[in-house]
Length: 194
Length: 426
Ligand SMILES: Cc1ncc(COP(=O)(O)O)c(C=O)c1O
Image 1 (cartoon, helix red, strand yellow):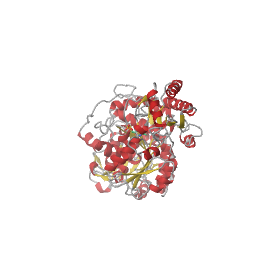
Image 2: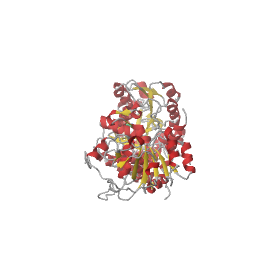
Image 3: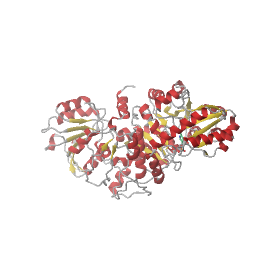
Image 4: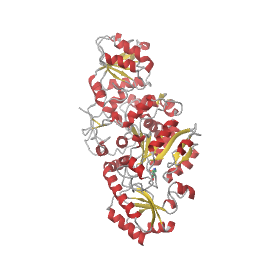
């Protein structure tokens, strides 16, 4: 599939469907983006598992670090890879050894490996690349609108008050902006050498 | 559930707004408060560190303002927006993210006179050097590019001349130079032209004009198209380098395709301070709900008035891009097929004196320095908005001494024509 843009419904189904998320490359340093994405997703009710061999023995928000995906020892719905594009493939290879397989492999904002994505998709796994699940959750629930961000969704229902541990509704009316001319052009510009 | 594509008018009414969580209020409340309580110390730290979504202090953001921001971002097709105190404030905040002292930006010569002043004098004192180019001669933009160029700035429909800019041609120059194209879309409003669809990377507005639309509140806004890669080379360190004031986070790496709007908020607005008041944000938001209706009427009236003036014996020339045969009519058909806006100029056979007489004889048109009001407005740019320019610069910016500028309102067009007729005959 095309990974330059995603339909809102594709992202919405993933975020509504998964319960457990293993975050590969999670950092215990509280000013790193992986730390605050982990914390946000935990606060929104996801069952978060930090994976980082460098921090085994420590915990992230009371969740013990595990050294590898294999060591989680129970089925996981989604793997969120917080690594550079060049480190994606080994993680995907490891994920493909899991039984049962994860349903989703998500690569963070800035990370993209089309070959790894193809491999995962061939095994029936859904793939998202170069996106942040915190941003997408905040956008589809419109929580991110506090920052002046275009959620590209509408709703005439009373807004919920976001509180810790609460799942927000992601089922707002989509403006279909995932495929706006602008974001298509952005993706294209990035891929065109200048 | 399938993705729908709501139209422009639906977005103008709904985007960004939702019934209030506590009271159910349907209109967007005016959150007239300076500050917002934190849940606990950890929440406060997360907000200050840009790690959580939420409100801190109205100089950085406010819930009424946030609705306005999402509304305009949606109408322009951008990823995010930042509302500020005025159109001029928007321009300062944008360029502060892009330029260091000694850097250059290229600007179209045909701009609002206040912007020409701001660029020539205030920005010069910051060490941001403007290089002028002629929007009617695209090659002049190419020739102006140097290794110090950091941005290109144009107006979609220029004030006061009402001329239409070839946005796509200038976007191509910007792209080749590896710099963002900033478009001031004030006179068109997103109803008539959406610059992002034509290659703009950043759109700015004076909300004071057509978006607010009622001549009652100042405001400005910056819209991020989400199209520019700020980290490609080392040209834009505010976005690509670790920020010491935020524990070393890199803005683009953390915020992706809305990084520019975030930089404007947390590095620009936070430190420079030109926040929009929640009340003004509310007034402008209310105005935007009727933007499509008003723009239709503004354009219909403007065309009728322009046609009347071009047939009048006292009139030497009418510069309205919506008239067949106008120099900019082809560009108007391409970029603004719904209408060429409601601000234009004309010149009188009687020259400067006839212009001054006309202004004093009008009974319905208000003589003042604004555009984009429900009321029809008139001004003589050479003696007011553009008075600080020398004569040659006045002519180049479309404000020659014999030129009168109109901003056509949404009154009955017959009444506007009758008022002009009696004033021209008096
Ligand atoms: C095209 C244009 N840009 C910017 C501005 C400045 O806006 P403000 O007066 O809101 O600072 C104006 C004001 O007349 C304008 O017409």
